[in-house]
Image (tube, rainbow, N blue to C red; front, side, top):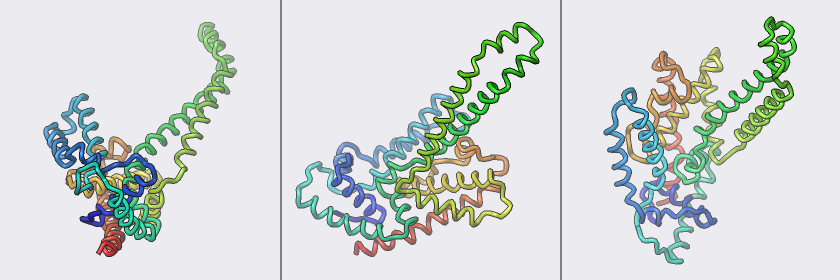
Length: 305
């Protein structure tokens, strides 16, 4: 197994480990089927030919979203180097597994947040745990379900009074036709769905220690009188900055994965005072990510010598 950098070593080591455990990961075969760097450059050119975000047509917006998703999906594979043949002899697998174990042993001994950082940023495990976007969507769905459940419950509870106060026979007949039991059943179903989604959000994954550590750092650094909603926006901005850092490091593409406009639209961050309230947090998150690399990667690089 050839190591070109600590980042590539972490990725390839966990890829070998996953493959040996029966996971369907075969980077050698994947690289043999496609020139990854050439494909990345081709998709990058297609993105550059698209107009600015405010001038995109709906079809172009879908095309851009698809290209960005494909770029992110191919990012870990771009670390792979070397032999493009799918033939791997037994001796090669044994030696590769031995080399991978050396790298993994270093990562596993790191503090929890650094180990999770390596998982998320550089290993294939991170590519299967890019759950933040789904988490944001699930949280929005939870709020929507609970809001609708409250509305239906309030409607069922206040229906008799509304019927009593009704002044027209037509409207009274419409209200009397409403089944309160059906409203309460729908409300209970929505509440149960919201509970299931919240339970799924609480389930930990390999990357949770890093995100929890980052949230704690944000809370410690934030002003004492900061509003809860503003603090949540700060967290979203910092997480987006971490994703941009990972995207730029892994792909070598300097254009961020999520621009300011995308962050504001997707996560509801106010755009009017973005530069004043949130731009400093982006710079801070970039420094934090850089410091994480400086704390984790030298230990791996030292083990490779």
